[in-house]
Length: 208
Length: 344
Ligand SMILES: [Zn+2]
Image 1 (tube, each protein chain N blue to C red):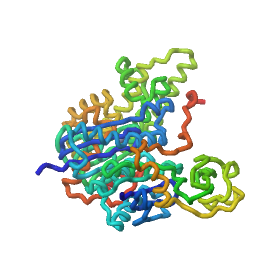
Image 2 (image 1 turned 90 degrees about the vertical axis):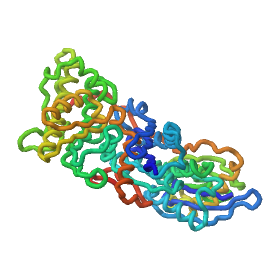
Image 3 (image 1 turned 180 degrees about the vertical axis):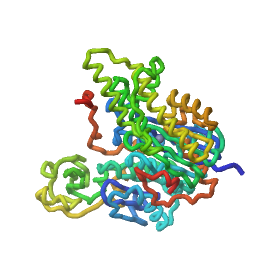
Image 4 (image 1 turned 30 degrees about the horizontal axis):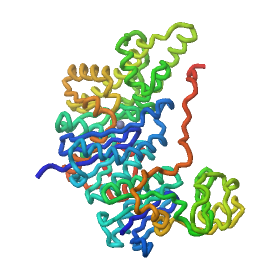
């Protein structure tokens, strides 16, 4: 089965095309990891077009799509999820995975930038199964254990070394593979934070 | 050969609007709104609106398709609001539209929300006379435009220098204890009131003021002061009279400036759009003044005045027929897209 994978939960936009089968696993045909910062909305669709062309795959040939559901900065995250949902509306089922599951492998903790001086984190056992998280905390409070992989800028505040690692196409497929024989669940973003919004207080007088 | 079928996406504020238009014919107009979720905040919360757009996107596309009795494979072109509006909200629509365009292999047009408010009138009243003057009034914008060619030449004559007209309605409604959004509630309360009972100020109508710009913030403050003085004196606030007098001050300025723009530019067609164009007093006074000045007034039905997907599809259809080049695949959103940029 041909699978398109994409993720916009971190500053690196990831899009890839892979062949997947139950016995042979994942074979990545084309992949891009663009340090696109906050330009995911502009660059995601062109990047998908590029990887499809490079892999010689048309959207209608896809058997499934995989998308990272976060956690990550909300605006960029939604760009990836709505793009996958729209492509999937034409091309095939879309499976959502926790984006952190697609970073590194084996026993590890994963940290990514949650902005506001906080990290998104998750912890995995030797089989690569998530045992805690995803969560959002100040680095000092994140219950991570070594080895830690992900965004190296947090090493100092974590008080531990962090090995650089990013979301990969292979990681997204590996995380989604157990779902491939099931109908996909609704694509619920892992926001982890409520919207910043407070109901207005009582009306303030304009005249003093 | 039949005219192109255009699918339009609108997500600039709190409405997820998906519309289908063939030529200048409206086929469907599906809408999901997060308005109820914003009510207790007294205004649209961008993050709540953006979350709602994501949830509503695919179901609303399907509603539009099934209402029109067509399939995705029938779509010839896609149009999407690229601005102005709330960035996070716009981006959900832009990303979805780009993905559908890629998957369906059809051209994509990123369009200006304000020009789309003008284009929607063509679905009900036929081809726009060009040039026309257009006045767009809503919770997010208040602009006077000269429209020589809706597909590629729209010029701004004036705009609000502070609050949008609809914002003033919301704020005054709050002062009067009426629910959000304020427009419909003030419109209703005003029917029982006397517009001449209180003389509220008309912003930017002095001889040295900008001819086509608007200002509603002074009016809003004047209403609040008047109401507070009543409250301090322990007297009841005549909600109907305040509503009527406030509403009259807004629509008096709007219609006077619109008619003036027509006269100054030798244009005899006026189009009014945007959510505030649903206001009954605005419609009545505009009609009266246009009749007196020999101007043909066009106002879309109330349903099409507020934000919707059909208006975006209508403008998209115009662009396709005018042979305007589609947008690049790296189209993004521009929260303050100037009106001069009809498509990008
Ligand atoms: Zn609008």
